[in-house]
Length: 180
Length: 211
Length: 120
Image 1 (tube, chains in turn blue, yellow, red):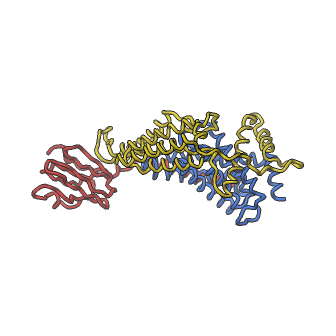
Image 2 (cartoon, rainbow over the protein chains, first blue to last red):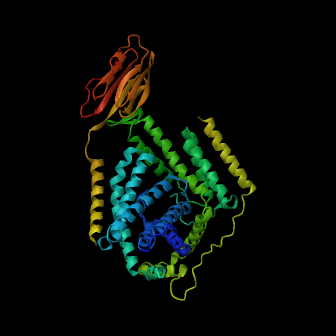
């Protein structure tokens, strides 16, 4: 993990922007998978998971902002409740994933565990907001379904991220190039 | 389904409206939608949003509206409130809960439709973040054009090749392009201004008149 | 899988199961207020604070709900017995303004009143 700084170095901005574009690209690919209404797989989190390893905190936050705002603009949902749910879920997910990444030694948790932790946080926040703002308290009945599906998708996303991390030559070259 | 799936359908509003004005117009309509006291006003703004979304080239369907509004109504009905209309077994279906759910459902659908109709992909954001977003979106469009090159049987290799194409990392590769070359958007046309003015006036008049 | 992968998987499953238990476990019906008038039956959750205007042949009886308790605030009847009935808080308790055809009772929870409130 590179040394933290309070700002993003200008030379790193293109890479952050490209990872932002990857998030949007993966978010669009989500629509190829059939899911229940209101439920998102979270493929857009893949680049963020991969970047935890070699982006600084300011870079990760910038990536998160690009992901959230970008999805709102690309999908046209920036001014709707979907944006509120998505951004809240993304923020909760990131906070938990980053905390786990920083607090637990590398050999004790993989991207699968990080993804599961993030997925739990994201879905819990989104269910809570749905109950308070959209569907009312009675909609708590959807919580088990969302959390259950979130567990499955968290496993899947984490597993996919681990495969990319181990086998993507492009990713390996990016990490080497950025650290030299 | 009311989603923008990188559709190739023509955005008819793009030729009439500058993206920034379009965004601000959307915010005003959303304000009317959220603050209007009567469900009839919210329904009108929701319908307007549906028309705008369709003109923007987005696919929206009546079934999407039914599912969205219907789900909200059902969940609200599970918390009875007000005059009992009839009993389902021992469970009361109440006027207050149904009306509240209907109003909320219209609002949720309206938020989605208005947003789809007034948030343009050409929207430029201010400042340095805006420049970064422009670069991100440029790369996103390039990646989307390469989507057909993803091969399920060699998914990792094909994705790696696509990534290398757009963000070269091999030794001797040309430097990564960091300039986003989008020409400035044309200003809003006279018909565009007319549309914005008329629709906003109608929505606000309806909200104030139906109180 | 690494140790904390399993920890988070188990946590996730426990959270899912816990939410399922909370949602699906049989519980007592929540306390509700029912107001019967000539215009029909009205129902409200007892934990909502509000004033309910119940209209009858004499005028409007105002039923005040606050802090999970209910009392009649104002009534157009001559003898004001409904006001003197005081405050109700528990399931099965009731208030009535017979001249104005208003009957108020708390339902739900573990006990239910057996009074037939349908006839004046």
